[in-house]
Length: 200
Image (cartoon, rainbow, N blue to C red):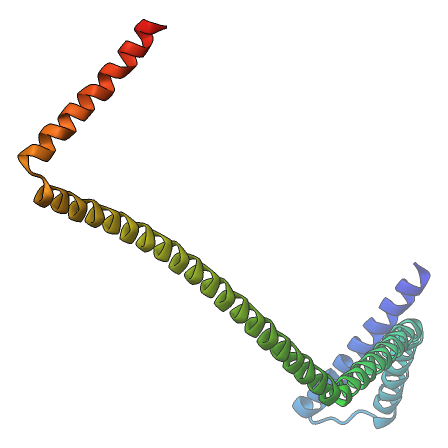
């Protein structure tokens, strides 16, 4: 509190002294009477000393904290800048390493994709051969079935044709006497089992 009162008194003297000196110069200009210059010079020096002392006091009081905070901020900024620089250098080194390995990675990917394409081509070729074999087997089976069906149909047709031909030949040779003989023989055959059954 004492320091505050002392600083206020110094400030008041610093403000009032130039006002008094300016007032003395105005009165001299109005009256034309010149006062002694020596007291004005003393007041100027006193004013200067008071102002310099007040500024020195304020600077002495607040400057160390201000400069300490400012120095700390500058040191923190330098540390942050150093940390950011190290991170940037690490990232740049990582990017350089990746770029250096990029050609090798591209070559590896290219060879891997070519190997996959070759394997896929072989697999598709084998699959195609297998499918063709399946289709051929199925077609052969269908042909065999169709051949068997055609042969059976041909046999049926041949048998029917043979029967029809035999029937025509028999009809062509059949006379009424042969018909009567056949009917008589048929009737005899029918009767003979009856007679055999009766004798038993």
